[in-house]
Image (cartoon, rainbow, N blue to C red):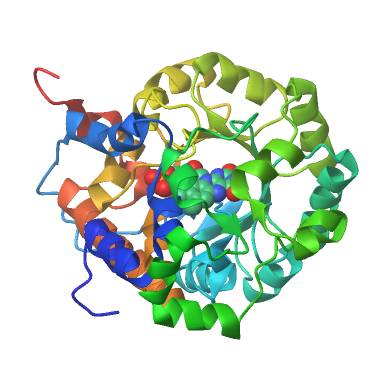
Length: 384
Ligand SMILES: Cc1cc2nc3c(=O)[nH]c(=O)nc-3n(C[C@H](O)[C@H](O)[C@H](O)COP(=O)(O)O)c2cc1C
């Protein structure tokens, strides 16, 4: 991993070089025409930043409090499943990098590292993400384990009643653990470092569910097959309420895009909404999260926190989201490409570059701290 990696696209290309194609496309791809995926980033170009000068600012403070936790910056690492597919340092590498940067890390239900292993590796703010499983005993067990392990918040992802139509995965035939097929064999051979590590660290297990899913222990399972067979689509607001009550602490609902659902989430006991399209991986053609902030803020006022999830590739994107009313942002692919290209060090480099740029750009905007950012710092580009 060289010092020349500077931008999102640099890390994306490095990950492409490091990974066999099924793994790269699993991260990079999205549903349908991937319109929502590209729109979620392109939308930032519809807005411009308006700085204020001569404010005697020589240093800035990025720290903030979100979901009840003090963080070095308003940045959360979104939950992403099966990180072992991308690097043998897996979720542990990501959590350690988040810890060093003072940021909140989220572990997915479908992680390849257990709730307890992450808790041992990361002292600071951390969130556990739940999918409601058909096995409701398992679902409530997640809540209890996260509590016992000292997680600071819980998040319920609601935008996966069925798996989205991800055509790249259908083509590459991604499975967990990876299976060598005739069509993918050449790609594994072309990435010998990754393939050797597959043999050296064969810990490809959905660490948080494996003890309850006999079928997972030996066989390989398609990702889509797992989602459609184990995750419950038959869930309602009463289920969100049950989890909020069982947890009793800071609670986010992830995957909400409408103002009406944000109000329902608050009434069900959520303290935050993660405005999210699941990185464009579920229903294609849904709006970019950035465009959902203002109507949601109008509907809920200051009664809950709003976290913009997805599309963030640069520090100015963070500033635009906050100026439009978000309390924090979260992202997945940027750190996953860092992980794929250099393990924990790769994630640290991604986070370090972003924090450095955020500090500089906040100063350039004329703000001393996060609370200084306001609606007057952003406006729509004329004609858009
Ligand atoms: C490879 C990958 C796996 C993901 N797995 C999960 C998951 O297990 N649970 C979840 O709530 N979201 C999951 N997501 C969605 C992320 O939490 C987040 O919403 C998305 O990555 C944000 O978009 P961005 O990647 O453009 O930042 C995943 C995303 C990716 C790219």
